[in-house]
View (cartoon, rainbow, N blue to C red):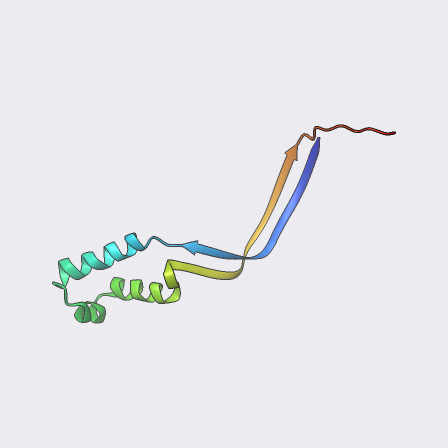
Length: 86
């Protein structure tokens, strides 16, 4: 029987965002409220501005953070094997 502890500290993290979700909201605002006038939308609409800022902060819709993760793991298991002496 084994019981092990593992720790992870200062690990980098990546968060993958759904481009479909954010661009769906963006396009809905653009088409339904601003009749396709993107320049006007980006001047007036805070949600659209935040989506553009998020896309700039997270290229390819992947947000990266350094030293983000602190975790502690426990593992319990049974080892099966042969122990022989000659």
